Image (tube, rainbow over the protein chains, first blue to last red):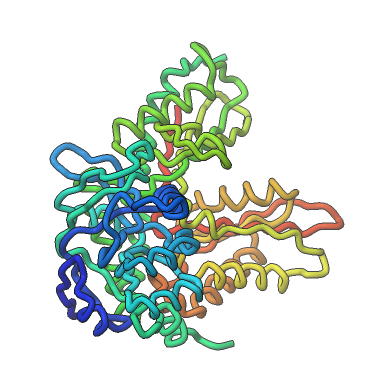
Length: 185
Length: 280
């Protein structure tokens, strides 16, 4: 199956052309954030403070990597379940977040927020943490260092394999895939 | 009476934490390969091939199979003729977990309080399940459990009149609700009977059985196969992208129960259902 190369930060016009099921290779910077970092970011926004990194046009990767072994920027670094960030995602999408990388289903509210923002939700392969680690070129903590694995990192990836799970029209690959392969009865 | 210094327990637990997180059990590795060959969905097949490649890369490089190196669940089967010396057994297990996660550069994923949520920094404490048996051997099995799948587990106190159909409905509802979240293809452990906590522990222990193994009880073996087939008709498929391999294996453990009850617990586990064992 053919994969399309995409450069990060994403180009809005390129995102508009993506469709659920497209296979891509992502290269460039992403910001890592999962449960605890999302909670802090949204609390900061609620207090009227700035986020620790510029959100507009950026991509967040839901990941908490393993500690780096010698000679590597990170250890295993596969996606975590995105649904736990659903409470926070619409707010970040309204502020310009353009891409999310994770795994697992999203709420209807997030799906609608993706459509409204012209954004995209990519899936990386859950449980392929070692393989994904080999796509990471560098990683530096940019905020919330005390959170350990949950700190926000600027991570530069090269040819990270992903699939479009929810596209800017709102089509959802999980729904399409399950209906295609379900055996009724 | 055989004496075992708890420092031996500590070293063994540390080694098993690293082994379990980097070396996918061969039965599971084979099941993934077989599924890749049989999966008709192109997305599903590609994903299964990726998982095989990932497991082989982890084995070769020492990177952990998954970044969620889990909460360390430690099963101790202790012969009653053994006496532990040199300190506390539970402390030795936790020290072994801390050593193993540090040396293996495995992720610290445990918070000290479920509501206050401060990371303990060394993946302790472990969850320890001990059983006392005749003899003088000590078996230690470390099963790191990731929470993408753990979160999709469920327990229900069914009524005896719900019977086998009620059990089937519960299992399929739980799998359907989980969808892509637990990193399918999953391994499903089911506990049937006992009390509430016994059913949950049976489900967890069922995950330790070899992939594809069948219960020695004929009616349970039949139920295992029927449920596995039904789960694989769901269409969820590898990674939830659609396909015929939603579960690699489904194992049921049973225990006598009360005249008024039919407890059933489902412990969901991912394609990296990891465990490593040693006997002292």
